[in-house]
Image 1 (cartoon, rainbow, N blue to C red):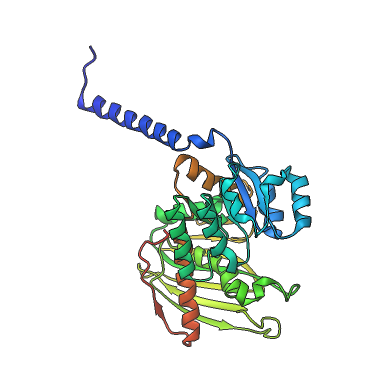
Image 2 (tube, rainbow, N blue to C red; image 1 turned 180 degrees about the horizontal axis):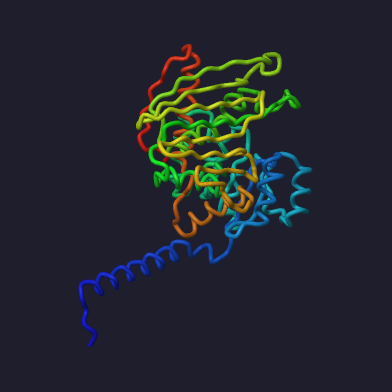
Length: 371
């Protein structure tokens, strides 16, 4: 008989626990029966048409299973392109019927910001996992409502921050966490583009968007400052200015903000609908990291003190949706939980408050929320 030592006993116990965990996960996901998870896109604007739809032809763990649109012509076009049957096509009035559709596991809300909370909550009540496009909602209160609805209905929640699944951003996060160059001292994140073609677009309507550049590209800059420092800011001071008030009549054009971090580091973000910027920089005690471009659909380009980053470009949306599907199927880490979207909205509201109060420094008590 083989002698059992403490070491072999502990090893056997660990292996046994691992096998049990795998079996439990398999049981928990039995309803998926080794199939790809079905995704329904709610809103068929340009992001769905040119990014999410094509990405779902390439994903390994999920696939396009349904659409929700208020435009009949889009129903026909998408059905022909993606082979969707009539029972998997919904409009905004009959959306709640999606609860009876066993082919749909995930609802991806890709609507104007003012509609995020409503359809995310309705999707959760229908028993579907939820991806809510960024920004998560119009305000912190709506973020709480979405998070609570998903918890109450035992479904998973993610926010559409695609960059957390792509390799350049993941490399920044790794190097910051491992302190490759020591403590971070300074971080800068710029995210903006020049808008002049569609003055009547919903992003320039505050009732639909909740704000301008800050609620659009600004959340990417906020994100960059946070993952580029590995910390949540402890305070923010912000300024707003406009050079084209005749075009930006209802929303902010350009915003800058300065962050202080718990370890003493400082940061700066810039966002605008009136200029093209796309850069990230983190400065450390003994080195630096830079991405330029840093937040578009790619390919991104970056380097550090150690040399250039060499990563193969893949669809960020493909990687993002597969990561969420794996979170559902295998209980892997959720790269972008709802709490991250709520945290960013707390910061957005603090930035607007600082601007309203003439650039006053606003203290933040975020702890490790969303990290």
